[in-house]
Image 1 (cartoon, rainbow, N blue to C red):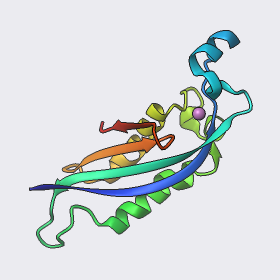
Image 2: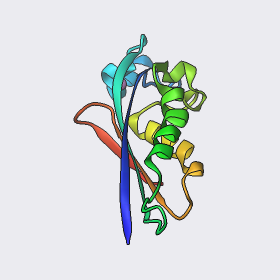
Image 3: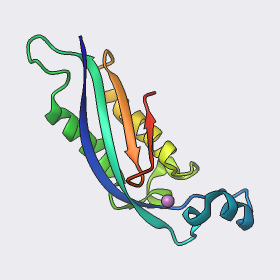
Image 4: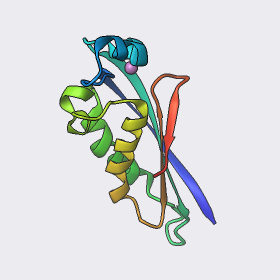
Length: 135
Ligand code: NI
């Protein structure tokens, strides 16, 4: 019997979407406002879910306190109040779209989650726009 547990988290971060190898007109056309050279911020909402068997002894799929601390160390401490393009090495050459941020978060968390359990990351860039990555 598998149960999915989820933890919500939050961080604010600034970004700019652009490609160095495209001219200004093309960057404007593809990325619109997100190409603002002076960057802009988003209030990101994150939902991390772990799907697995309930441990017979503890009754947990995973200790929520452990998951909470893991998200703080691996995600919030690394991304909160940061300029993603300038301060987070993963985005030096990678556009910090919601899609790519979700994948980076998943990659950071995956090594710390029991390999028998499935990991899913849902990232809201705005209240209406969100992406899901499960590996
Ligand atoms: Ni944006």
